[in-house]
Image 1 (cartoon, rainbow, N blue to C red):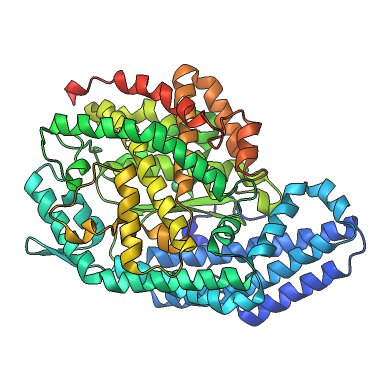
Image 2: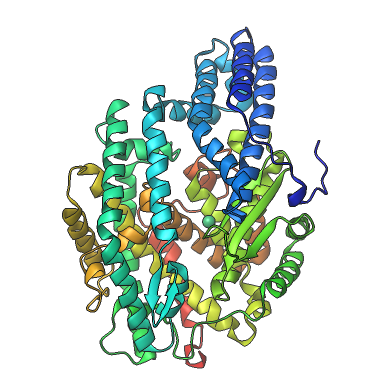
Length: 569
Ligand SMILES: [Zn+2]
């Protein structure tokens, strides 16, 4: 057992070597092959899981260290090694799982581990074959290329040079002329890089379509779902769900946008105007990261005993790196080291409300990882991605009573803005999702056709979009800035599904906090022992795929919105 008080910087950096790793995996596979009963296989699985836990922890430590300091040569080399080896590791896990699936004692193992584990294994088999390893390596390269193009963007604006996220701040500036100029600068940069980014995407689409065909699928849609571990829903159900959002949420979002523009006194709104919520400016947290972490400590300590223990572990063991620094990778994430049973939160604070969101959203992910750490079967520790986002997005609402800590007098303004954003996100989310379905169903479409399709879908779901000063955006290129479209196809609707479920948590929390919190903790502790719809059923949450449930979850929030006195903002 590892030392519980070990700090992150004391975690050793161990770079896996190809020969040693393969030898070890081959010998563990051989041990399993020799098993004649569930009893002996149980031990072989235990040994395999132990080794996988060590390996994934080593890989995780490398990846975090590298993202903290991308200019460090040792970390860079270690990360390159891992990128190169990971498809090879998949080959061996695939072999191991195949033996378990075909074992004559499988029924006994199912009794031991549950049937769902074997569903996960079957799903993994369907998405992999050694013959697509070169394609997978190429896919990794192309998505890294996309990250690089966007991550290294240098955009000139008013005599200075900014990256995309820095420029984003000006796009929501209080001054309309600043918003406009910043948006034009962004659009100009996009125009200059449109061809390069479009080429990367075109290659990715053809590569993925090719892999799907090699594995025997009609196109990439089904394979995309399998890769995301979706065993309980399909593209048809997702379409039905998108239709519910279109019917129920699009009109509500449009009303919110209208009210926002009325409040700002803008008669001919452009897309960049919607970035600014209030004439008095967007809510801004008071204090630097040290102050905010201090507030997060107070908040999680007050919330419950479990969350108090959690936040103290995160702080005492240095499991959060939040400040933006030169050389640090962009963005934010939460990860988990299974050998140490510890989560880790990575972020780039920039002094906006987004900083508080990290402490609540990524905090929710980390809290779930912490609560699920007792689950013995590694495949059951984390659920599929849409369920993971329930943990984080619901935590964003459970933290509402503590927002005065972070925002002072702006607390109510923040909550109102948070809820509006959450509702307005849904029409955008389904737009990205519908677009991707079309793309993979029409893999030979040209870039122009893709953009035209995006624009068509956007005009239905987001009819307020106007890009009169931004010719590149006006062509229907908004999707090119959405990294999920490149990195993980069909992983975007997940955020909307989770958001709809989190709305139910908000409504229930406002009604009866004790009951809602208990339900939330239960869901977190269930980890990935069930698929998405199974988890919902287990804790009595509405399934968004069922007709009428989106309406049921959204309806109570309209009352919540009305209770805010927006004249004070
Ligand atoms: Zn998240």
